[in-house]
Length: 447
Image (cartoon, rainbow, N blue to C red; front, side):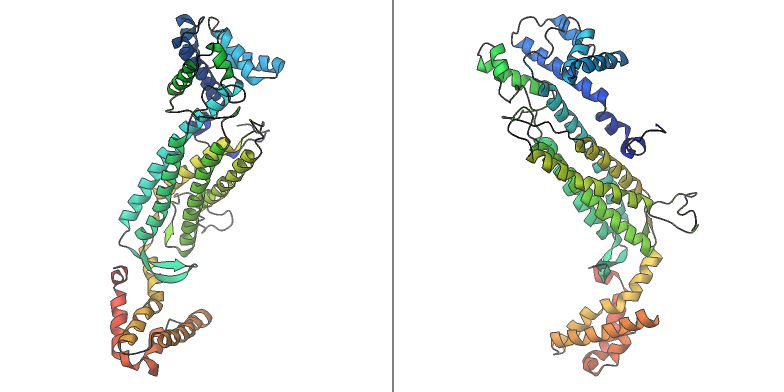
């Protein structure tokens, strides 16, 4: 790690070796070589002269670039100002018997765009693997605490009871939708295939002397060799950047899920009901020794915000692709994959070390029980012949009076006593205590 140059924390601090390696120059250029090999194999199978078994074997033996290969390519690119031709040259140096047939009939986007699609597909596979693990960990947590009642919140105000496990299923459901979206995106990915400078196959048609069937066979064979079931039927010079929109939309959508989960956990940490793991010797603040900051969840939120906005970049890039293509860099793609990978790692770490405080949860429930019993008090009054709307208004007034006493005077919640002293509720005086006692059995609420 350089101490004198800026480096993105996505790679220098947080980066996972697999996902960072996937977008590395070594992976990029070795994928180009694989694509040149696939093209040569398919062209040889379809009868193109000059492609020998020896040339194929030489290409196979040099798919991984050495430091010398990189140096040769860099020197050639400095001279030619063209990265693809520089790497054609470097590949030819180590595979001299293939030097004359490398890139035969192809355009630069044959390797650049097909290479990107191969890497993007592999990246989606890596994200899907990690997402499945995260879902499994959250599911274990939900099962463990499926029967532990907790105070539910709407508008972050006390509502009715749920359970700690049930709340976790809200997170899991969205993660499952993300799994579905990312799976669909991966499965829908095609290869750019064997197409020329503007997306036609004119160069290959000339190579095969007007034989359309062989050109189609070439496209199909290269697609298969590259690990895809199909190629896009039409492209410009590049594959449509709408594909990038689909990919980044799916990844950004996961970002919104992760942000919601981490935000919920940060709020629960403030309530002291549920916390992320906190190491024995971890320090929360340099000044306030007692602090237990939810720094993992905070990190998830900050990274997820970055992840969510990257979808906008793909939309804008796609919108300015004039005709067959415009040269627009797409740094948002590797950033999105690396960011999502880091977020998944954090979520797994958090979900494997949740700390739950049942006694705190129980105390919070007890403080709000009188309010939660009001709906059943209203129904009991209606059964005695009362008017539902009038009863609701009486409860509203008494609830606000009780809440004022709690908030402004720091006293206990005396709503039930107020109800018992109100003439309107006389028909159910004998039932009020019974209703409250029923609600003290929290599980009654959850049936």
